[in-house]
Length: 175
Image (cartoon, rainbow, N blue to C red; front, side):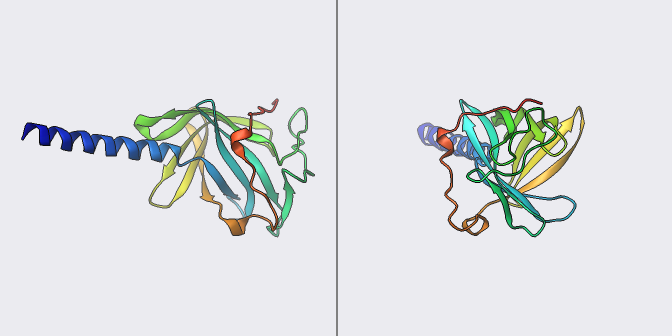
């Protein structure tokens, strides 16, 4: 009887641990960033792991009509507010996010607003109810949330080849 109870407790604990790890890893993948003010598709970002930390690279930007403007394969627009004026598509805007399994989040990282050239502290959580990624940029206790939506095949331009993010090495922009 004791053995059966022990097995049940162990299985329950293992299942809870697996769900916690899965929720924290839900941030990896391709995400649509919607403009807070206009409600229009602004960009698609690839969120990828590197050496146990989480990073995010813009791979496609869109114009006001939600047509592709830049891709990592056809870079055109530059981040004018950054010292080196790097291309927007291909720019890492999230870096050094650490996993906090206990709170099911990524935190202690940075996020860049490439249009303003500003860097903020950041944390990322998965909202299972809305099926969205909650990305919070903050200065001290103050900040704001953005809600990113999982990108699906139809969100990518025709002929766009998804990059193999496992081969990427982060390139932190100079700010």
